[in-house]
Image (cartoon, rainbow, N blue to C red; front, side, top):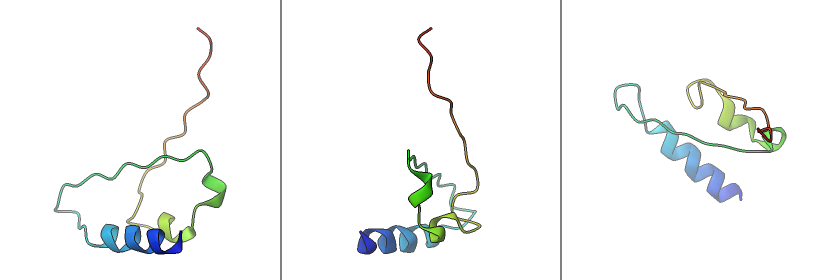
Length: 55
């Protein structure tokens, strides 16, 4: 797990604002995300969706 996280961080640090690359990620467990993923410049937006209703 740690190796995978480190590789993701290395890859994300390789992007700059001029590359026009968008990284989208999702989790249902934000409480266990490594703080390094949430540093400024990595994931700039958080979109929180409510559970769907029956209708």
